[in-house]
Image (cartoon, rainbow, N blue to C red; front, side, top):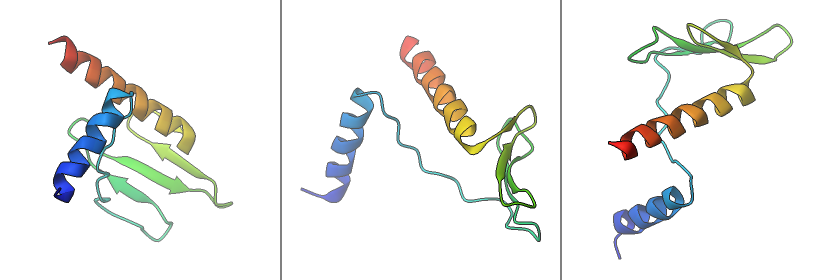
Length: 89
């Protein structure tokens, strides 16, 4: 069985159990001189990951300042909402 067919079956099984797998985009810029990375999206000029002087990271978009675990939780909620909206069509 070709790898692409196996991958499709694995992804379908994960999705059926409530998991979503996404391909992460590469940063549009970074790391800069301060270690910051930046991504552009269709609705936000930039989403950034920025370390402070002590090495603690923050994730920012135009509306929110989050710790990394909060950003993952927010992203999961956005994916869940997108799936619900697509399935309700």
